[in-house]
Length: 411
Image (cartoon, rainbow, N blue to C red):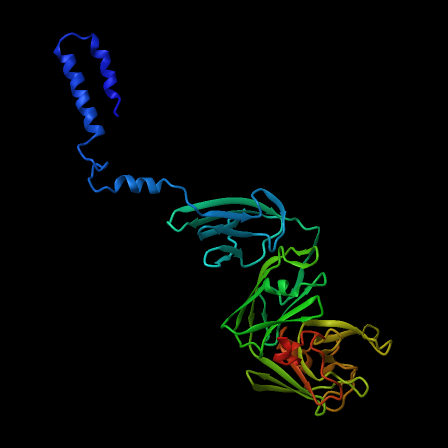
């Protein structure tokens, strides 16, 4: 009941009928405020006001739970973060790091739970905000903060090609890790390759420390490739976590594939499938035959030293100034200029396994075949050798995964 009329008691000291009129008027107002002349309990007369207000004030039956508990430290980067609800359904879950970057995830089980779709970063503070509704539509919310572990042992990946580079159609994205990986699925999941135009790209492990990505066939000219390395926090092996987060972009240049015929001593240089030049070559002599197969250019050296001891041939040769050398395998196969056996290209095979083109000492003459080919080649271009007496080059000897079938590559 309205208690304001009590204040009128201060008027008792006043004389006359005016004071009594004030008190009487206040009592009338008080009665109107309490009763209103309606037995329904609502001034509107519809019977709904009191019930609606009562329901709004009730607490939601939904109980949101967040793991790990708020304030936790040293939290694992995978499998520890979970959000659930009892007697309700989750409607919103937002997880952010200290910089405001969101962690993607999905609500599942008909709204019963939420889990992240990827691992968390190491040594990072996260905030969680979760909202759920019960069967009556009433909301309940829960907030939490926690910090992930700081690893004692870490790994990174060294990759090729470089960010911002333009490469040939045979170039895979190859990454070599500083530690052997025993959880390859977790690591591979954290590396995302996107292309424009879109093409299916698959990864293949060579041993436990190298992972290459390529499409089924050579890249299409002009393709733009983006690789997201989200390795920070990935447990690659027990107690060893990635500490790398980087985006790498590269573009595929014109299509150049050169075909070496070891029997005919020639190399046909093709661009977009058309022969642009036929070059005399010399390949590996008997006992030192050149590998057959598809080989991708991985390094270009204007002048370099070649010593037989570095590839297991002892002191058979030591040439300090080999011009226009392009690496084709890790084991030491190059296509390079040759000035010490000028009659060999186009006539006979005289090398210790490399492909040689006529050149001059010092490589100063840009018109000779060695210089021309060097200047018209880029990292990622393909050299195919056929009709040699040796085996096909191993897919992991250089960037030469094209010598593996697509079915085997995807295994």
